[in-house]
Length: 96
Image (cartoon, rainbow, N blue to C red; front, side, top):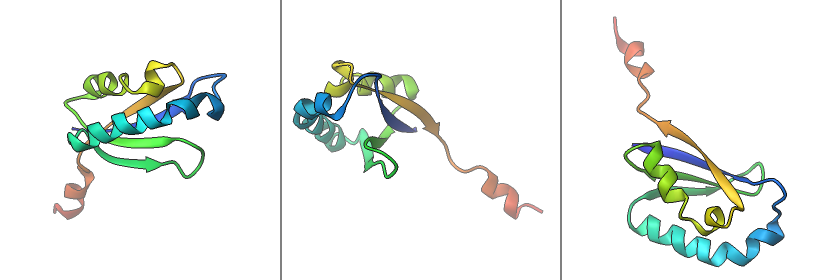
C-alpha cells in the first residue's frame, strides 16, 4: 500500500533546531529509498518541509518507519499519514 506522509514542525521548533540533524536525516532517508520503502520524496512548495510516499503494509508500519527518522526521534517534527488506494471512480465513468 502507498502511504502519503507529510511532516509538521512541532510547536516551538525552528529551522535552527533542525539544521544540526539534517545530514543524519538525509542518510536515513537514503537508506529507506534504497530499500524501496521511500518511493517518492518531495519538498513542499507552500512551506519548508517534506512529503514522502512510502510503500508499506499499512499506516501503522509507516508510522513505525517514520518514528525512526532522526528529526522525529529528537521530537522536532511529526508526520501526518494518508493511506492511498487506486482511483475506483474511473470504472463508473465507463459503465453503461
